[in-house]
Image 1: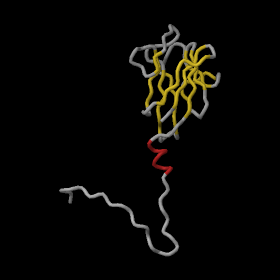
Image 2: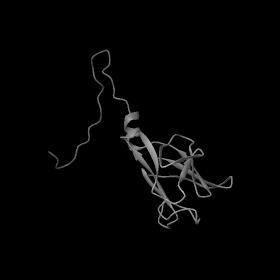
Image 3: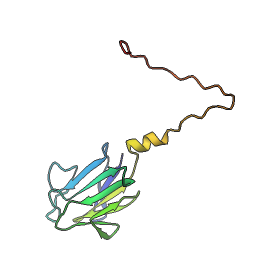
Image 4: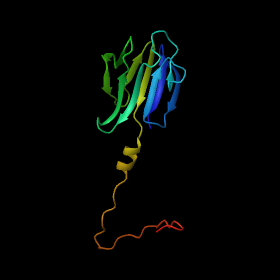
Length: 130
């Protein structure tokens, strides 16, 4: 789950942990990150998780003024912890957090112990189940 910090002119406006892997950015009131500025399009950009691309991606939605990641103009970029996304007069600081896939991959499969005896595990019984 990514943590986003919204900043303007060097001061923090808010910090939020998002419980989703698709975050909209824009001037529209229904955007997840709603930015009140004429330099920001209604549907300016998105931050989304892509297993295929190996992490979180920020992508411009064809806005007039574009986006910058760490002061570089981009249309699309893979995000790393601490990256700064500039949209209009705002800076969005991205912290990766964990996605569902990261949480799953962080659980290790138990290896068979050297004794050859597997540990017992609790079993879930569903009434009426087959």
